[in-house]
Length: 237
Image 1: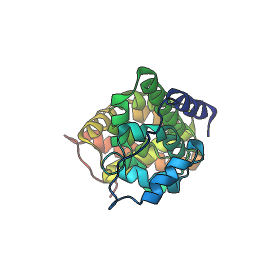
Image 2: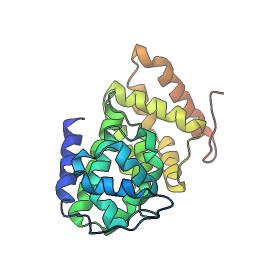
Image 3: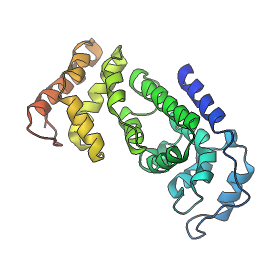
C-alpha cells in the first residue's frame, strides 16, 4: 500500500476511534448467522478478515446492525477494500450505500478522514500499476457515497505517467462497452469525455508498449464526442 494511502487509513482509525460497539446489535436471524455476529464482537478491529467483514457488507444496516454499528468497522473495511482484499464481496455495489449513511452521521473530522482516504485511494488507482482496484470501481464508491466525481476526474487529467494513461485507455474502452453507473456518474463522465482533457492525457503517452490500446481509446473518445447524446456503445465493434 502506498505511503499516502497508508497514512489516510491511519487517519480513518484515529477519526473513528470513538465509534464503539454497543452491548447488543439487532440482526435478522434468517439472513445472518449469530455466530458471525459474535465473531465480529470478539475479534480486534484491525485483525478482522474479509471472510468476517464480507457478510456484514452484504447485510449492513438493512438486516444487520445500524449506522452506528457499521461505523465501528468502517476503517478496517476501507483498509481491506483499498488493499484489494474485498474483491470477492462486490464492494463497489454494496459499500456506497452504508458509506453514504456513515458520512451523513459523521463528525467533520470523520468526513474529512473519509474524503482524504478516497482521494489517496483514487490517486493509487490511477497512477500505480500495483494498485489492485480499478478506477471504475473506485469512482462507483465515490459517487455512491455522495461525493462529486468531477474533482477526481480532474485529478486524472493532470496525473503524469504512463500508468495514468494506460488506466484511462482501459477505462474509456470499458465504459464504451456499457459499464453501468448512476445518472449523476454517467453525466459527469459524459461531460469529461467530451472535454479535451482525457484526449490530451492519452496523447502525451505514446509509449510503444501501449500504443495500440491508447490509439483505440483515442478513437473511442473521438466517436463518443461525435455522438449527439450520452450513449453506451462499442465504437470499435
